[in-house]
Length: 119
Image (tube, rainbow, N blue to C red; front, side, top):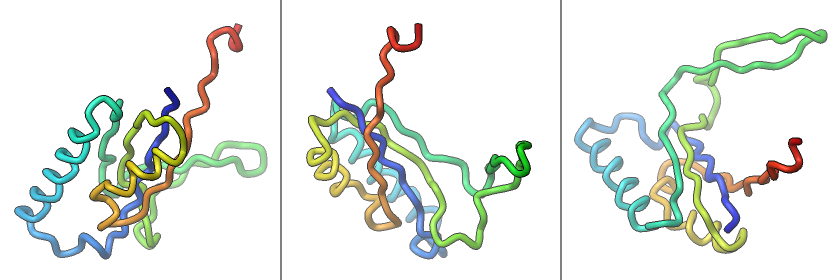
């Protein structure tokens, strides 16, 4: 069955000022949602806040900069990997994700590279 990555982008304004108790309730919503998918959820994690690196080429050489940038409107906050019959089903599953209250979700199909193609 095809796999899709749900890339969760956080709108930092949506969660600013939330108490630890409220944050715990939000985390429980995500856990309940993931569990409701049963076998369709095959992976996923929250990414750490505020730390990362951006790697790009400049004048033919790799340049590393700190990221994500706090001035950005949205920051990659985490991801889920789900199995769905097609994009339509992946979209329908993503619509029920609690993250819709806190940012945006980009849905990308995983392009499976067959082992034989690597040989």
